Amino acid sequence: MTDWIVVAVQIGLPAALLLLAYVVGTAVESRHYRSLRARELRTRGFPVVTFREAPPEWRITGSELVTGSVVISLDYFKRFLAGLRLLVGGRIRSYETLLDRARREAILRLKEDAFARGCHAVINLRMEAMRLNRTLGAEGGTAGVEILAYGTALKLEKRGAV
Amino acid sequence: MRFEGRIPRDDVNVSRNSMLGEAATLVAGIAIVVLALAVLVYGAVELVVRFLPADVEARWFRGIAAEAPGTGDPRLAPTQALLDRLAARWDGNPYVFRVGVMPAEAPNALALPGGGILVTTGLLDRVRSENELAFVLGHELGHFRHRDHLRGFGRRAALGLIFAALAAGGASVSFPATVSAFTERSFDRDQEREADTFGLGLVAAEYGHVAGAEGFFQGLPDAHASVAANVSSWVATHPVSAERIEAISVEASARGWPTVGALTPLPPDWAPPPRE
Image (cartoon, rainbow over all chains, first blue to last red; front, side, top):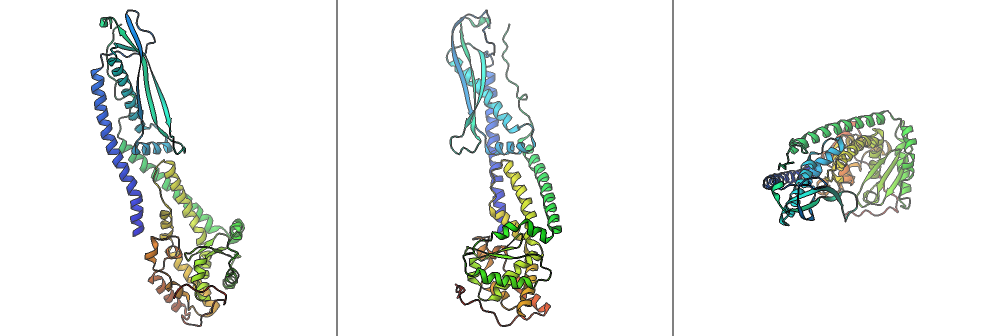
């Protein structure tokens, strides 16, 4: 009887932690998505493009490098779900939202940075993803991923052309 | 060219199905596959064990039995001699038995594949007469007789598969040894009873009576008290209950084996028992 209790605790405790991680993670995620959508709507008029060169009709008065960076890590539940995917393959759904949020957040931060510097547009937008290694306990795994968005912010003489 | 500000779509890079649903489907699916595999492995090993001739087993596992440790203990030789006498009482015994002494406080005895029997120093310290030791050794011989010592392999292989799948799944769920010890133990009750019966038979054949067999159990600490403390002791792997002692005397009277008789003392240089 005591053995069954021990087994129940050993299986039940991680299961409870998983559920807790799921509930908290979902709440955080939907809040983040609400914030993303609101800010994207607000900054939709600010051009961020991947062109390497500005359109010839733009009269550029200044330029600078702008960046937006996000460092993300996994929660217990997402890691668990991805672990299951290791066995059977397929889309790792738990990473998709995480990385989607990170990319959109990075671009938003870049836009907000450029806007704060008094710029009017960003060209040559590029994105990078970097894995952060664990510094302690070198037995594999990552500490997280950095998503970096960077580009050239331009100051324009007249925004009318845009 | 005109710039038109658009907001990103939510459904391009992200699947919209529920994570919880996906987790449930995956866990259930993987569990079914792994369990089916475990059953298959278990069945396959059981089949091999059932049809593996004892002499082939002895050849395969000769190494394990030969490496029985603890040759330094002076009680090894008399224990081996007693084991040989008991084994000679077993008609059609296909094994050559080797006893080994394992330095450990907990009283315990183990049957190894190939004919090795390990007894702990704790067990040797506790026995008060040769009859008690003979019953313990006879009980282990009973495990060989019913091939129980090999039967654990199928179970361990199946459990190993399940734990490997859990680890591969990246589930940072740790399953301490207690879980596997528990599953092995609860499986063993019937086997223990049958080994008891066989051991009793050998003791009766050797001494003409089965006195002392249950005496050993009565000297052991209560099973319930020690389960949490040490599941690997004799008490836990060989559950001692009033039921079991009862079963021994019932068995003895059914077979007409006297339960009283003169106990054969241990050799004079045997370590004094710590009890009493």
